[in-house]
Length: 96
Image (cartoon, rainbow, N blue to C red; front, side):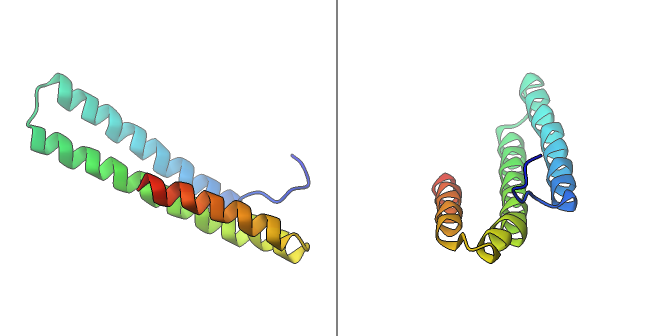
């Protein structure tokens, strides 16, 4: 890996676990569709998946702040790093 700061292992593990659970929920939604389950049930499950993805994104952004952005600012690269973080935030907010 390069000398560039990256997320802490704890954050990576947390996000991976969340994504694994989300994958399971998505497979469950697909099964519900195949079984012809009630639309309200399916919508509820999909809403749960969306919320879980949102939480994974929040965890990732928190990790980004605590490591990548913090270290870049400490290293004198504040302007560029803050601009990149703002771009990431804009993507998240537009997707929501």
